[in-house]
Length: 306
Image 1 (cartoon, rainbow, N blue to C red):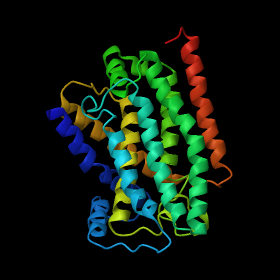
Image 2: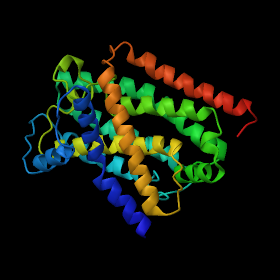
Image 3: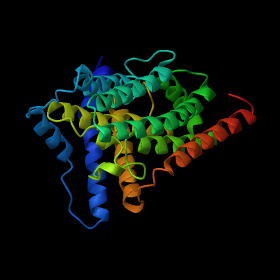
């Protein structure tokens, strides 16, 4: 029971801190003080106290979009081990995990299209294109984690990797880590795929889809963005840190949070030294990530099979 409470507490409390670390890192690199680490918490609390304005052209889809998206991400977070085994561990949860991310993305795009705005429709179209290219990379990256262990569960796979010391034993691990990091940047609308701070509507992808949202709806979207970053980051952290799933939950949770902090700083550094890609170049990067992971899987089977 204590493991479940720690998992839920960390999942609810810490994701906004990752966004704060990214902003602070970018500010330090640029020679600025930057916003406080708790700025995302402040923004969410402020938005929750405001009202929302709904256009007469919107339907229930517009209202349900942020809620369903956040609910799907919370459910996905219960499938990923944090300090201990995931509360909803079962055979095949890795497939459900990918589908939950897709469900949240679908309702975000549906809410954008429901406004009838050409700009939000443009953003939804771009999001659909990028996600269609990112999902194969995500599936192959997760397959690289599960195939050596013959497990269809994230908790089962990471538990076996830690016990057997196999997280560093397969060359495909590096390919999977690179691919998942690229997917994280794309799925979370980070540079070089998207700029979450831009105000140029013609270059927006994710932000243009949420232009008409406000108040609590926008708070759910901001928190959902932080939650997706934290969830995908947890998978990447497990690839490199010897987090013993099922062991001491407090120590494992602390180790994961340290890894999440390092990952957030890495994202901030990437955004500080790279520019946003042209939209025509994004498919090339995502397809390249898919090929990298596919080659990793081929190498995995070539050395004797899973």
